Structure formats: structure tokens, C-alpha cells
Image (cartoon, rainbow, N blue to C red; front, side):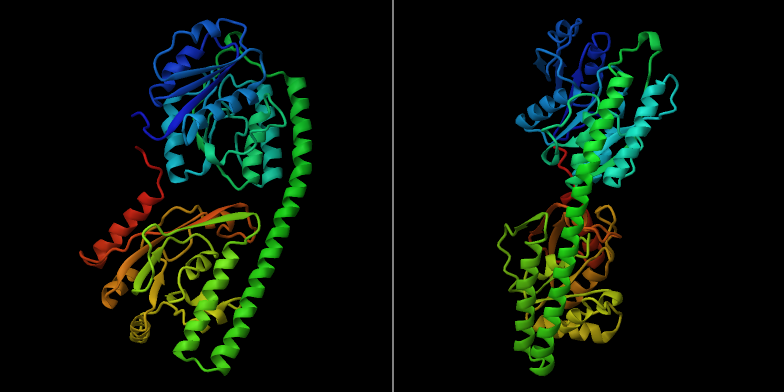
Length: 469
């Protein structure tokens, strides 16, 4: 397999692995140009072996053994200092196959903000019995603490997004530290995913193991007791955020319903009143998005788009929160929705007051849109048609581009990111995280709506992929 060219390094913690560490380093260098080796106070010949290494290897040394957790933290901090965005961790005992690194990288490209865990086959020949039990024990507690099923929480073969890594001030420092890193990251809203990898366990007489069954089980039990207590408070806090936020969204919907009744029903649905209603909607949407508890938000408009000239705004679709991310852009926007959204008992009346049309094939919809465009309104549609569960860009339907061609509108792409992590599809539970909206340059339809649909899909996929160069 070819060497990965992403901004990724490899971190290899080692303690008394003189017999295997050099081979592991050489194998890893076939896939990553930069390797950070952390010698965690080895007392065998490891230090001598690490004195003669090829280019691309950085050695960090602990004068005494501090534990695998401390060794990983040392490696993470060095990797961030060197400017890397991601780091693969791999054990120095030779149990992992470096040729599986591209599997982790491939999954990372689909979700650059996830921790990717290389999950081993726990029924593999020569797999130590105490390790199997410890892993299942750890898997149970991890699911209890985070709600995430993971088949191998003790695997040291992982790919971390360094900017989102939480828990660098570890409670523990040894065998159980990797579980702690996963738990704190999951609580912070970082996705944890797995891919199947191979594993090799040498015969017992050749194996170098630092796992101490009684002592390490005791430490794991103490850690899990602490994490369960913390999980209780974290869970209560997140549910409090969720209840508060949905109460706030309910108040938002009720407020806009009341305003619509007085402004548009009693006051008359004039153009001036419609624009005033849209302006209030924009202002309140911006406020809500910037004040979702436990989250941060950023807005980017590098090209200075003013929205003065009508356009067909297209965006990826991740969450129920996406509508507010679009409504905050400009008061002069008409969003095309599905019928169930238009009839939604929670906020459907607000949608109808704002003249957000349900998607139909009727000539009346086209006539209504033409009138709104003539009044200076842009039209917005989610080309995917539905939210994606994993935030990946799905197939673009051609309808948005056909409408743009018929209405004579430019295409105005808007990237929505993080909304699906804060409020995932099929979830009513808010998660902490960062949300962002980025307005991209306009593009004209010059090759027909079908070709434009394909072109814009590729643009979105590329925009959300990690740059390989």
C-alpha cells in the first residue's frame, strides 16, 4: 500500500521492547514519514537501539518509567508542537501490523474529527486469557459510561485527531490510560469509531508483557468507579442542557408564532411585513445558534457575500439545527422544505408564515418562487434531501440545480459543519461540540443543471475531506 501523505505522524511508546521496537519502527516508516518514539525509561537495550535510527524518527526519553499514559501524552504534545493534525499510535511489541495503518487513515478521511480504534480479533490464537477478560470488562464499562459500543477499548492501535483530544491531564498513567482518553473524548463530543485490524501474539515464552492482572485490574476498577461517578454528573449536565435548549426552541417557535399572528394575520401579509418577519427570524436564529449550551459557533464569509443578489443557496444537511444555520444568513431567503416539515406541529406555522414552500412538482410553486426572486429573495434547498446519520455528504438530487437554471440563479454553496455532532439524526440529546457555517463563492450554471449537480457534489465532498497534501 502507498504511503499516506496526510498531516499524520505515528507515535510508538516503548518500555523494554528491545527485541521488536526497531522492526516496528521500520514497518511504520513505510506508511508515515514521521515517527515519534517515546522511550519510557527502558532498562534493557532499547535506548542503544534508538540511537541509530533513519531520518524521520524523533526520540523522546523518560529517565524513569512513568507508564504508557504518560508516554502517550508526551508523544501527543510533541506531535502537536511539530504541527501534526493527527497521530497514529501503535504498540512496540509487534502485535499490530503496520500495513493496517491505511485502514485507519481511510476511515479518518471519512470523519477527520473521530478517534479511529483498530479493533483486534479477541479470539485470535495465543491471545492471553487475562487480556481477553480485561478487554471485555473494559468494553462493558465504556459502553455504560458513554453509551458507545466498542469491541476493543484496550487496543493501542489508534488514530487520534490531536486538536480534539481530551484528557491530556490524566487521572491515571498506566495500562488503563487509553480507556480514560476514550471516555473523556467521548464526553467532549468526539466520535469514536472502529475498524477491524489484524493482530499477532507470539508464543508465551517469547512475549514481553507489562500487564499485571491483580494490580492492573484493581487500577481499572478504581478508574471505572471514578468515571461512573463523573459520568452521572456529565449525563445530568447534558440532559439539563438538552431540556433547557428545547424549552428555548419552544419559546422561539411560540414567540415567532405570536409575532406572525399579529404582524401578518392581523396586520396584513404585505411585502414590508413579510420582510420584517424574516428580519426578526434571522436575528433570533443567529442568537439561538450562538447560545446553544455546551457548544461554540463560528461563521465565515471570506468573500464578503452580501446576499443582495438572489441566488440558489445549497447546503449539506446534518441536523434539525441546520434551518437556523441557514435562516441566520439573510432575511431574504425562502427555504424549500419537505411536506412533513411544512406541517410540523412544533414549528410548521413559523415555516408557513415565512413562506417556506413545501417541495412539489406543481407549476404554482415555480410561479411563487419567481415572484419571491423578483422581490429579491434567494431560494435555499438541501440537495441531499435528508440528513445523514454520520455527517458524510450524500448524493445530490438535481432538483435544486434545475430550479436554479429555470429561475436564472447563481449557485451559492454553504458548508454546515458540526451541527450533526451537536444534535445527531435520530437523537434528541444535545452533545457538546463546535458548529460552523461557511459561505463559499458563487458559481454560475454554465454546463447544464445535471453537470452542475455532479460538480457541486464533488466540491462538497472535497471541502469536507482532509487535505492529503
